[in-house]
Image (cartoon, one colour):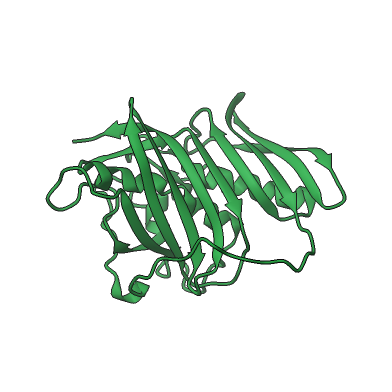
Length: 254
């Protein structure tokens, strides 16, 4: 564990949930030799910088085209997260897409997000380049108060300042971006708020090459100290790559 795959206050970093899900799915794909179709991660404890996290894959059922498998991540004798998943590919000609990408300005015409001043300078947030196409990200919106729609649209890519040779947008990167559903909680409430993920579920429609991901975030609701939301993830061409959802423990920082 190192700061570049961590989040949290500078003195209390922990592994970013999307990194855990992405690493788990990468291990599952390598062991089974099949691409991910669906996965759910349950987060059980924190992994801190300096610790070593071990991912152990268990392919429970292997069919002709689909595997049902899980991976458990542990450190220091405790479980950090568990991922259950289905992986495979079926060569059928039928294809369709009915969830459509929103129409927004291109990423170069959208403002970048502002990074939190209390973060570690080398944490994971600096490794992703986000542009805000609609709504706000992380903190309260201008004017405050409850948002009318709980809706945020973002462009995302690996930060070219840190990856000048480019970094492919693969399964692991999509998982990292999907873990930014909580970034819509603060703007939805009109407060400096976010949360800790209880889970992260992701369903892959079709991986395609793209320089940017278009992320359509919808916070469904906040109640009883928890928040729930989803993210549709598209390529620049509008092709659906994945859809993700999360439940999280609400945190208020104002």
